[in-house]
Image 1 (tube, rainbow, N blue to C red):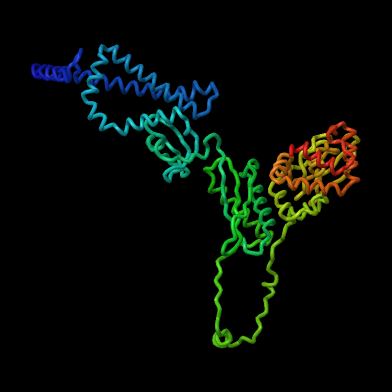
Image 2 (image 1 turned 180 degrees about the vertical axis):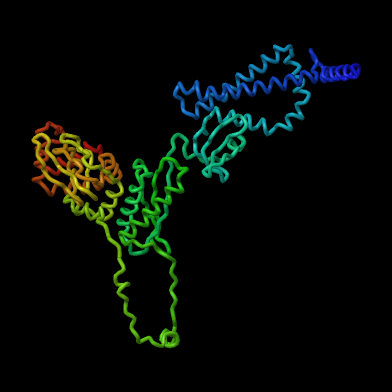
Length: 483
């Protein structure tokens, strides 16, 4: 029995130490097993080192997750390769023998592993170029989601439905990839909207912008935009464009905006169109006698029908703008541009909007709520402004410091036009600046008082000194807004 066991061990020893390929030393089965064991150990060490670098060491350098992923992957694999070579040589294995083995099997290995090699090279390309990084939101080939991890062979994408998809790296390199968050996480949503013919385009524009600003997910910069895109078969076509932070929530935000649009359209009696077909009858009287023999009977509306609500129409910003004496003669087209550059500002009770002496950098209309106007220097309450009131128009257009402090008396919603957006409006429409100049010029006494106020504060430039108030306003606008 012992002899048989010894014979088995002798035969196994010969099997493991029989040269498979020539070399110095020769490559045996035992050497191949040791190489496989070493490779497994190295891969385990690479995984541990990569996790340590990404989640521990590189975090202290305050690098973003994308750069940490790239650096940890390349560094761990590089160190792993050096460790593998060193370990192989330390056990007495000639690296040239390994190269001979790879060369002998090169054709077969290359053919079998060509996809692995392509993915490996593609992984290096993705990590080095970093055009796709961890936490980017990407779309390609009908797939969309956040990049979870990037390895040398494949990339893991976390989809909107909560699952993970493993994508070979060569697919990312060779396909057209749409990245919503390449450089930032901001994306745009376009919502087509149609209304019936006869609707007021300016009112539609205002209501759509109101819907955008009422949704907390919509960014104020870049500002929402409304385009009048076409005259359709069944109505006027518009498109609401809004920017959001985090496009993975596009479906939820789109739904929320649709709810707001429907709600505000009902409030303002704006109707959606529906397909209509007209049917012309050659002999309507004859058909009426057949299908409605009691045609002389008059059907009166029931009390319930008469009591149906038509919808409460809210006060439009366009109508409020026309109450401003400097804007009262602007056309609907010009007022629409003011509506588009304006945005909504919410104030909590007792919140200070601006203080006396602050730079006049915005114009306000109160859409709901009320504010107190206070002269702090003399500790005097000047006025309480309610819904529909406006203030700050001359401070915006002439750069006059605030003469009082404004504090919200309750929860208040303001329509706001900032100096930055006002400047952009005048830059795009230089002819509007002249219209405003002419309107301001109609109020000589008010302008004289404001000009004297600037002189008392020493804020009037020498280039603006002109006896003609209209010329003074024109130069003031030119200087302030770099026209």
